[in-house]
Amino acid sequence: MKHIISCEQFSRSSLEELFIHTDDIRNNPGKYSNSLENKVVATLFYEPSTRTRLSFEAAILRLGGKNISTENAKEASSAIKGESIEDTVRVVQGYCDAIVMRHYDKNSATAAASVATVPIFNAGAGSGEHPTQGLLDMYTIFRHKPGIDGITVAVVGDLRYGRTVHSLVKLLTLYKNITIYGLSCEALALPQEYIDYVEEHGARYFACQTFADVPADVDVIYQTRTQLERFENAGIEIKEFIIDKNVMNRFSATTLLLHPLPRNAEIASEMDDDPRALYFEQTHNGMYIRMALLDGVMNGTKPN
Image 1 (tube, rainbow, N blue to C red):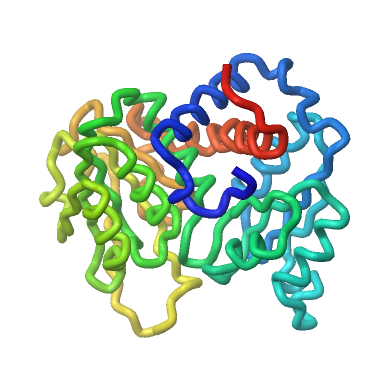
Image 2 (spheres, rainbow, N blue to C red):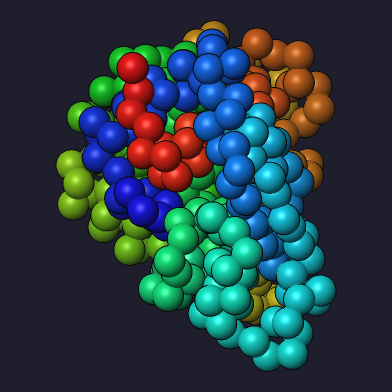
């Protein structure tokens, strides 16, 4: 792959190759410590980020590369003067060997890749996709439930604007006999285009109204934050689905609890010591997945 733009680029075999590569980097970091030697990666963030930006930058440094960065490009770059994404990429690619970009426009990564001569890594594009987050989410599931075929997953919260959900459901459909339960208020329901994608690729999707609609033995609960910054209608009515110990007590001891973070109140802090709560582990997995992506795309490295 030349660019990482969408989860639709991945096949089951390429996804599992990525997981093998990620495990090798995790277990043998010294083997990869110079894989980006003499290479520069630019990180352009037009929206706020903690985990994605820092894990990408840590990945670059741990692979022996160098990083140039702007973390507030919407206000602190030539974008404020009206420069287009395409022109920014044409300029920045002259300074680096790859570009990691987060942008508020859902078509931004595609626009960037259309003119880029260096690899583009989509680090979140508006309400569209966040492929590297989806990949680290799947990797976290894979590490705890390696036989992904046949699993059940509940996606909860803001399914309309939550780009991490959009990427995750696409990746889940690479496996067989997948069932997805979508729990949200009506205003934040999963857009029909993603439901169609899920069903066209052989998985099942069920919309839910309450936690009681989700089977107690569901394999994964993927909770999300309400994306208030993306609301087009300030008067939209929302309902928060909060997970605390009382809610989790109705689910299995083997149900995994994931969240892409940051969280607000949708997962109570009392859940942090529950062995099923994997959201902090999930964030750390992000660095290793991004190391594997950078190494794979920029060097063409295949897993051993």
